[in-house]
Image 1 (tube, one colour):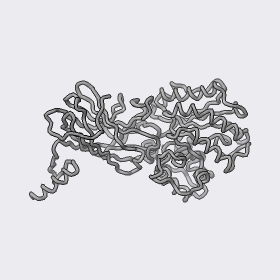
Image 2 (cartoon, one colour):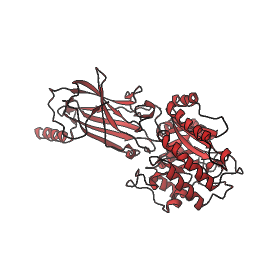
Image 3 (spheres, one colour):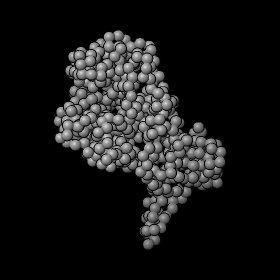
Image 4 (spheres, rainbow, N blue to C red):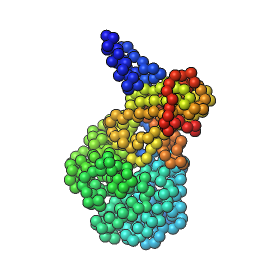
Length: 472
């Protein structure tokens, strides 16, 4: 029995965990262990979930995003708006300054309301309505580059658009539905959309054609800023037919490609009226979205399909699991540290959503003095875009406290904010974890339910590294 206790204690010391022998807890010196409870609550998070559809015909003098309307969307649990910018008035000429200002104003409205946009640009809304020439498209993209750069923070992803009716790359009056024209538009879009953001193409074949490659992205290529790592996918006829009305050439092969590919790039879109051969049931929808790593979906179209999912009882699951959903499982933390001392933590987290993150995101720990409210943070060298669906991930931290930190008790938080200065610290753009009693709505922090005592009387080791909590 003595030997068993010794082995358990040695194991705990090596992993700085609390351990159990039967019902007995063996505590490691100055460490505290927490188990977190999951929640089924449906709540919004940035860049994922159901979106609202909205359009504007630039140069018409009307149709600007309404702050009150999209603020209401945000209050109802929507964090994305699919924004169609129709360029009918500019099919044969440059975009006017007024039109560019209209686009810029929409992005600012979204920023104030806590929403991100999925922009798509198009010239026509009917099969026989003219689109623009390749020369005009490229000119317009060059004009849009400064707008994209200025508003990168509130761009979720950019759908390719521009070619054909509705920007869907099919019906075209300018002979643009061919490999050469598609190549020119993709190349120009990758030049003008900021490297931290993706573009999305209408079918897997378009990406395979452009890069002359049928194999999916690898983890080594992911998020590198290379062209191939920045091209995702959208499907505007999800579950509509065996091929989703031409989205897939070989459904089994194309879906297997997306299953791997969309671990590193976003996929989303909308349903449309199904052909009736293969019903778009709730179960099929959930299975396909899980397999294909879906991040977002149109809430308003096609209502016939969406209403079926409600009737069949699957809609709440879909609302919860579209995109990422991060759930804390457990954590072990230093709970007695001296100024200038070493703080350790070991946090287990799981992504139970359909998809990973696809845009850059910070991960940081925050200490907050329970008496004064004074706060300190440390940004961790972790890329949460690699927290993949249904995988457990470990956030391991060794960091130092500043030598001059005031003594006292501190609460510890996990914070996943947007990295852009204009959004950092805004709760609407920070990630909420799927656990009971963690979310602090006023700050966008997740309370780790642990109290850290900082005192010069604590007997822990000095920290000698360069990862140190800083006052904020």
